[in-house]
Length: 69
Image 1: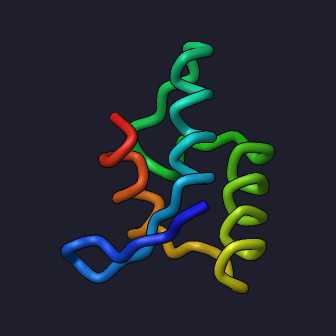
Image 2: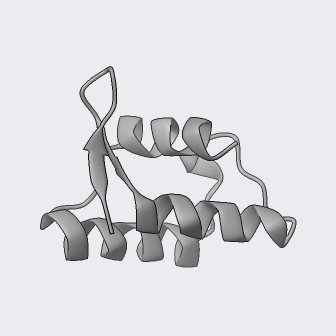
Image 3: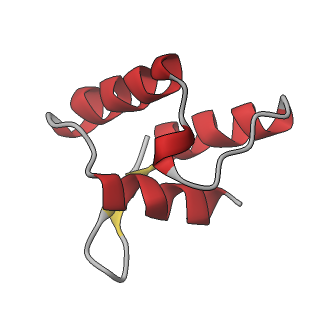
């Protein structure tokens, strides 16, 4: 599993991107992080904590959504 820094200096990773893409294949599409149901946000937070030791910022989640489209 990889993590990388975006041009803007935010961090996104393979596991969160894969999760968002999987949700998209199931018809669950999101434009903004504020649209995440609680269980989606909790899973993304857990993936970041597991991989980086911290929760994602709102900006990182926005960039993750942009990347995963």
